[in-house]
Length: 79
Figure 1 (tube, one colour):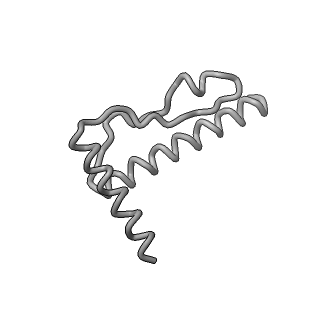
Figure 2: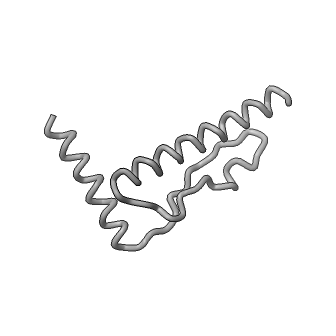
Figure 3: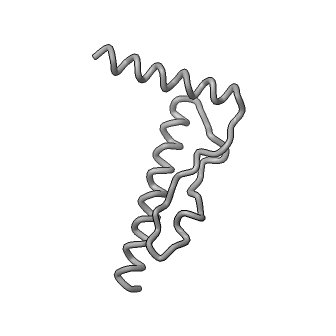
């Protein structure tokens, strides 16, 4: 494996770890984005720039996600 291939693999692995961390944090908040994944079109290049695709969710789940984010913002402002 060349250094370029190793760097590309490391970049993708890092993006997968971030995706998993986000999924875990959402799960701890009682939320699950069913389409959360890496966008394969963004890492198919020799120099990958992977993007995490949040995907689709139902309006009730989007409402819950917004409420969790708002609660976090309020907690941060209270500090």
